[in-house]
Image (cartoon, rainbow over all chains, first blue to last red; front, side, top):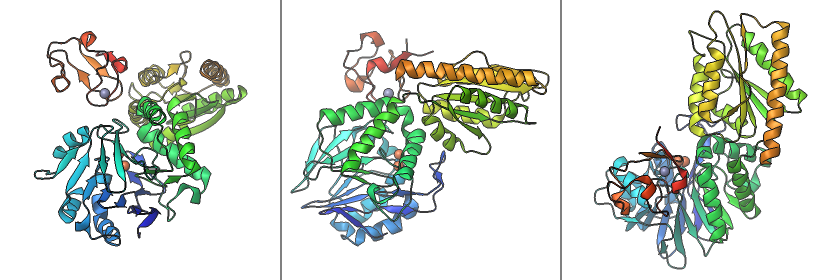
Amino acid sequence: MKPVELKKDIYWVGIVDWNCRDFHGYSLSPMGTTYNAFLVKDEKIALVDTAKADHAGEFFCALSHLVKPEDVDYLIVNHLEPDHSGALVEAVQRCKPEKIFCSPMGARSLAGLYQTKDWPIEVIKSGGSISLGKRSVTFLETRMLHWPDSMFSYIPEDKVVFSSDAFGQNWATSERFADQVGRETLDRVLSEYFANIVQPYSPVVLKTLDKIAELKLELDMILPDHGLLLRGEDCAWVLKRYREMAEAKPKPRAVLVYDTMWQSTEQMIHAVSDGLKDEGIETRIMHVKANHHSAIMTELLDSGALVVGSPTHNNGILPYMAGLFQYMKGLKPLNKVGGAVGSFGWSGECVPALNEWLEKIGIEVVGSGVKQQWRPTHDTLKACVAYGREIGAALKAKIAALG
Amino acid sequence: MKYVCNICGYVYDPAAGDPDNGVKPGTQFKDLPDDWVCPVCGAEKSEFSPES
Ligand SMILES: [Fe+2]
Ligand SMILES: [Fe+2]
Ligand SMILES: [Zn+2]
């Protein structure tokens, strides 16, 4: 796409990746994504981030609409993940920059990713600032939001912050600003990105939001590296949404995830859902093979309870469930209650194994679960409904305690 | 005893210390200054737990 002027002499020079579905190898991006990069034209010309390597041609074409690449003076590297630094080597070759700015942690990683010998790297610590002429750029390290090297770059004269992956969303659109698209979908893709990428660093998010408030950063535009850009009132909106998601106050909603061989566990899960509904808890039932693990994490972000089900299979649980748990544990969901159900033929390891996973993930387990040999009877399903009510009551108590 | 950062997984090893930030090898976790932060992610001391 052609560049878009965002403010006088500040341009979007990004890539719209309409076809991306597998985001970074672990998450789905069902509506594609963008790799946003920015050009600031002042007495010095600065390029903020680049693009994924396989889009380098398109990237330099867009850039050339605005400047000759060799006229770029400064490269600002907010984040080293290859979706933003993949075209960096070519950018250094084409632009022959006077300086390349990155964070202290960035400098450590750069040499491991690329051949940086002879690159004019200048390390900038948090609070450090450079002049572009009429404007300046101040850097704010945001370690682990979401990599050690991550940083924000802020132009006080324009009240613009380049926020790297923070506040990003995976959504390929021809529009550039959040106020030009549907709000409900925007909120969905914002939380999908948070749930799968930012969530484990929720304490860092809260610290960063506090820092932004403490520094009294005036914000007229928040420009993330993926998806729609935020301006005007949307800046306050996105900061508020990030605070809500990072605080993770439990909500009266439950996700029930399961796998099943001959539908016994499936019946039990449906019965638990009925019990939760008796307690006024909204439910979403998700078969682990009908839903990608990243879609499950997005649903879980907005839910205070997680119920899991698996039959016993070869003295353990079914493999897709184990894969989901591994992924979920890394994302460190907060403030959830949970429970487990499962059926078995001749050995009943499933429910204890599921509970062990829930505990490892940090979920408060309610009771000891319901397990059933062979097929659930009417009484088993009644026990599952009662268990659903018990989990619902525990969730309501948690909401009351943390609300 | 070693301590692990809950945010990024960095392990503080008293035998190694954190020389880049002026902490000599042999410094126990409890003796680190209060304003010491995780060298990888900037987390405070309170974000660390004993390695299990
Ligand atoms: Fe990233
Ligand atoms: Fe990214
Ligand atoms: Zn750390």
